Length: 262
Length: 262
Image 1 (cartoon, rainbow over the protein chains, first blue to last red):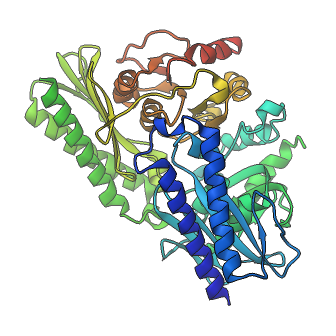
Image 2: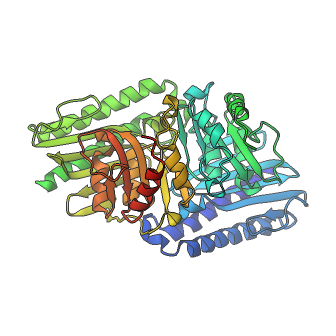
Image 3: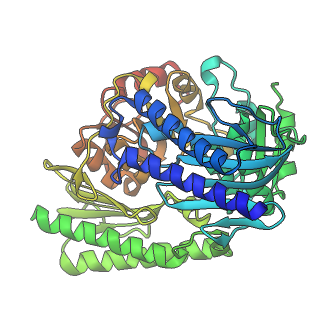
């Protein structure tokens, strides 16, 4: 069973990537965004329809949760899709946009895949069997301290609402890390934690489709994913995400707790 | 003359890219950074030697300024090299590291090239003739307001020194933009401004080799590069960089001036 789910999951995100590429062209440059909101709606819709119909044709009794809604979590199996993760990047033709898809049985992810069409990189995982990048086994960063870590977050994400929830804690973390990055694509940043390119990723107010596949891929690569306060994640609920290599998890939570604003 | 300089510049950064790639492998993953500082020194040195010897063999009377020092700015022509821009990314096998090279006559850049080996993307420019990405003409983002702009900066870069110079101004800017990114590679971020993937890039305390090629490539793509206070850049001097599409330059400087900490 898990093999069939895995195969369908990987095939679907590759199809999604092909759709994204067909809309940006090989040569990503500024002229493609003349009407960026139209482009986004068009690509989001095209990807979601293609993935939804491919999955439901094969597994007609499964639930499917996408950005357009749809029945999720009531059935035994639920697929969770983010058709274009990193939509602002995509609209600006900035690399770092992916398709993210996972299949859950109840609250437990069985398979997950994140595909980056601009680099042709496929991150995937099967529960209990490991995680891969283009077929090669991946593992989280071996760093044991923040001092040797590269951490990503979308620091100013919610400044416009005058609620820079993560700013005080991140400022403290910023004093202790090797570097801070903001790539602007939650699923991709979780995939990068899984393969060790990032040591940790921290973000507030993510939706189930943002982290649905990343949760499993990070865990199967030897990492840890919790809420920002260290509590367990209910994957059906919106909230914060702290994905790390596990070893620096406590240090990050410690700094965040010293500077709580929530 | 400018054709020969351009050809040599482009050939040199491509050679640099090949050296970087030979050290990370096609499959970038965590095992390549077991001794990251050794790897960096090795690659930095290998790239600098290869580029320096290729350039000086062809133009023996030119000056050459790299991270290892060397005579710069006293001769009529000076080459300015950053062998690996985005060294922390490179060490973590995170994409977003480039080689940057430019040739100046006096204080005026004649040709510049920035090469990203992980995406095989070459950004280049010739004074007065334009800027290109892999041979295609590029232009800056058409955005006219911050509200529709994607801006990058290395926000927490200097927090460890307790001098978050750019934080208050950036927080203000963060309230008005579509998104903030931190890619961690000054030359690449300037190249992305040139091709419209980013609307602006802002950073403090950069060195001549960080922005030597970016200055010209952004200008030739129709953009504007100044210091963060809007003043003209002396390319021989370390300092801040604000590279933008020109149209949002004033709006950014305005917010920075409201929150000056320098």
